[in-house]
Length: 337
Image (tube, rainbow, N blue to C red; front, side, top):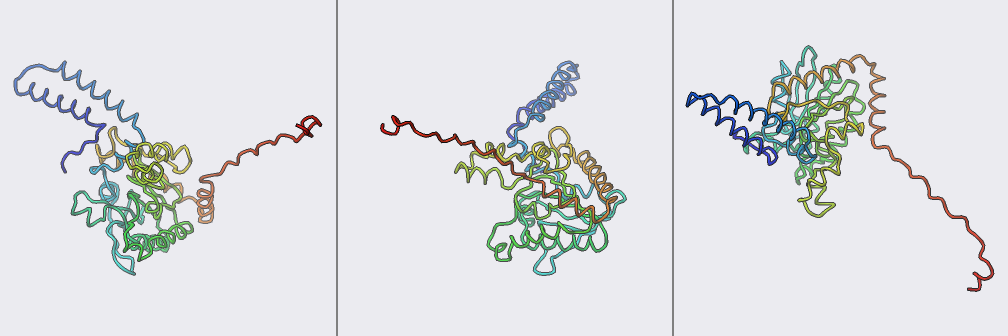
């Protein structure tokens, strides 16, 4: 895949190109440029830290959508073994935007489900850009109920801009398919760990996101609506997406503070696409740690904790009623005025 650079990454890329040219010059001309190279390396490291430790919410959204970012299958290739894909919802078709199957993570046998995007135009058309049809959510539920039957934990990988909004999806009842998943995931008698690995958009993300532990990658986002959609509604202009991203509180840090997610998984400096192996190792460690804790719980306690987890999200703070001024009787002079 060709190099893809975000606007805020361009100064870093320019400095990297300068460093590369300087090293080539030193090698070709057999001259000592170590002092200049060291100086640029230090400047480059400082620039990376300054840029990627102070990202705006909109910049994190851009990183979450980066076309070179690792997807579900990239992670499975690094953290799982014995992956056996399972297909079809047994009602209509096999949706390629949601994948699932049996796998082993570490020594833990699990059922995995998750969204999968494409790397190029052809694959994106096959995967429908990660936007699932109703049959995708019905397939996911079939596999999750199978996991419950065989007492296997479930690991869900969330990465979608949202469920597919087309006519066909509406004809096959996309809202009903997602609603059924929300209801049934809440009562599944097996541990569930969900991880937002990229985009976590609207009901399309929530359709496989009801879990005992909700984890999120450092540069992923999770939101009721995309920043562009929010901007189009509130400001009547999608150009206000950056402002909307800040208002939505959709970053990993914000979600952790709001007690919506349970853990933020760190990424390498520059984003997950800079180092697949390190990112995958961090993800595997977090999944296994949370599964170990959940496996120790009794089923009744697991279901009760899951219920309470979602009941406490979004508490409403009641404002104190305004005190009314006591009524006073008008004086005769005021009454005759």
